[in-house]
Image (cartoon, helix red, strand yellow):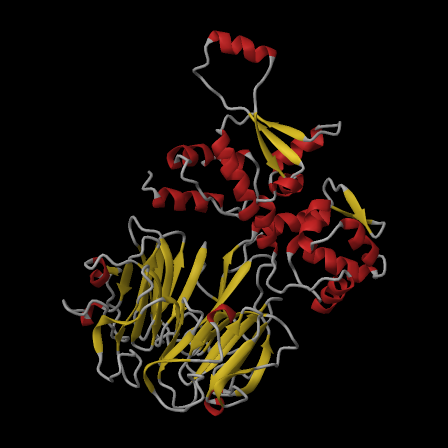
Length: 587
């Protein structure tokens, strides 16, 4: 079967491969990159895609030709990428920052260059030496309209760039080519590639804002520019999940999934012009998961993978280029793969939705639900389940859950179990009602990955053991004779449903064991440490090593683990191994 595209775009584009504008709700498939981590697009709709662990692809476009440039940052693992006015910044896991911009405008003293959008000459990513020369490491960064923001590992905020309206925050309107220190004790910084202001949070649980605010988009109750950071007294940093600064409006997403806006409602179709962040309650109480904005429009995704958009360039009519929606409207999504995790991003007047990974954990648990493989309990008399998974997801005993489900119809029970096994929310009202009857509150923030991580560390609920026996070629004859009498194994506690759902090899072992058993033997020859790392991967989808693990041995022993243990063919285990090899400079 042909694999579905992983990147779609809509909007007013310069891509010559598109024969006509692809205005919402119409979508066009984009370049078939694999293992996409993030896509960003700036003022000129140049596109930078980060894929694999350290690879980048730059798309330079006009209405006649498209140029595609592949590059990578050698010996580095990329952590994040951001787009600005006409340039990009790349942050690595090592705390270094690289700049990607048009080569014609770079010079010896401008460490973070801006670029000419109309030239197709771009250099490879260039290390920003300003920070390395001062032995500074960066843990987070953001970019605005010709302005750059850096938070160091020492929680200091440095800013440089175009300073019209106080966007730098040094109390002046003077442009700053090199970064200058603005604030201490900073935890996060927020902006957007079209933003003319920025926000940051502090270790004291405070929110500050600075820059252009003539339309009230700073959210501080005034409609003036602010040259030095001011505290936004209505908000605490612990309540904020994300913020986006656009041309004349700003977005604030809370940890509860609520969206607040501030700024010009006439220009951007916000449906409200407010100089304080005000709840935009037009989503039928849906929880918002992601927000992003272009120059004068915004789009978002809910927890149920529904998209809403408003402002310019989100027209429902392909013949109208500048139709402005006053309030968010639901947008039809492209033909996305049925499973996976998606992200959204905006350029100046273009939108992207893209697959960041096939969520094999959810796929595997979904298969477990659909095929009812080796269930051990029932609820509401007729529904087979895996007890540990259901109890851990809901937070109470199975008997209590079963009594409540007896009062529900078949459709409602299936909606509930679908959420338990895959995290999919088909009807939030049904879930809220079931949790209410259980005396609980349905937590929007709780997802299946978080619950599996808790189970990984819950030794009391583990109901199975893997017996690991390593191959040791140096055993002497006496030890070999002893082994013939009695085999010696190390034990690794685990939840049986994890092994059934995630590993074809263990699933086959269980199918071949006729008698009830609470152990299974692993004769792979891999070390106990490697098998433990693999088991953690089955719960989390990540490889995480401890100080006692030998990275070289772990990598060597896990090279063929996906095939040996018969993991899902879309598993990201090979990619996780790549990350470890890069982190520890292994061949």
